[in-house]
Image 1 (cartoon, one colour):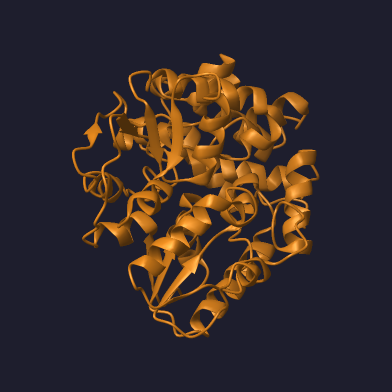
Image 2: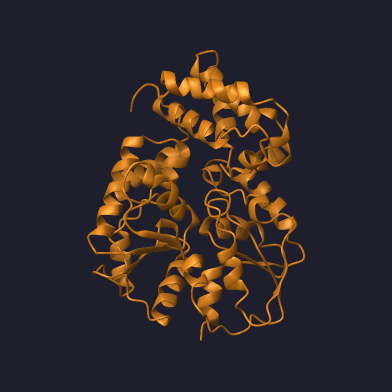
Length: 371
């Protein structure tokens, strides 16, 4: 890694963001980490000031600075709310990249990234995704549709991956699994080397192209964002990229009723604000006969973060839990919170254990009720 990523053009970008920011504090009203920590340093406008200070050598990256930069979930609600249209998430991730390049990486993040480099997943699992899929009865082969499982659904939230595969089989889709590796989302969010990331992008895209795939389907919102937004910045993506909910929204699903429960939907930040996929999940939920659905007060682009993104849950679980509790409070009327991201399921679900509510991925519900 180089000693700095703060090249002249990037310092100019940071300076422009700092001069554009009016310090109005609108970001304060929506920032999930500020609500959990209550310090202006853990807020978008504070992080812009700190990034500039670091970039010109006026600020030392001590532990307090590092923590402030890494308690951001990169949910992008501040970007939506900013009247000056400052792309704050880009500034924060640029700052993180420089911190990492200079050795200021949190131990948990370092362990996860080194595991991705060595094992191609953040959990240090020895089996590859392809080997796990083979154990489940699936092997890569030429097909028009491919399912990209992602690390979390393969090794941790296994029911999400198995439900996705089951749905594709029930619908009679000609699909394949992949010889995939980690999509790179974890590395990208915490500021790891861009060189390593681009190598990941190339390897995954080449594996997909080799099978003649026309449509890539993903159930992980983080993986989806990578293929939809980040990969095209560095490599050609010559196939359609769909989240599983987008794919299912195109189908006429024969679903059985969910029963006498009130359900709501939580928009994942990766899928929602970052990729503007709001309606497909709701269109799928609407296909459950007689579903009793109610929106949370803050939904779609206004949805509040679950607290599980940006590396926050891994490094600062207490802050992440506080953010999740805030979101769960907003759904206190529901029996079931449906979402479409394994990170949201995990983080909200962990805090919901003592509450009378179930948190579930939409693909799991669809698989259970698909005739």
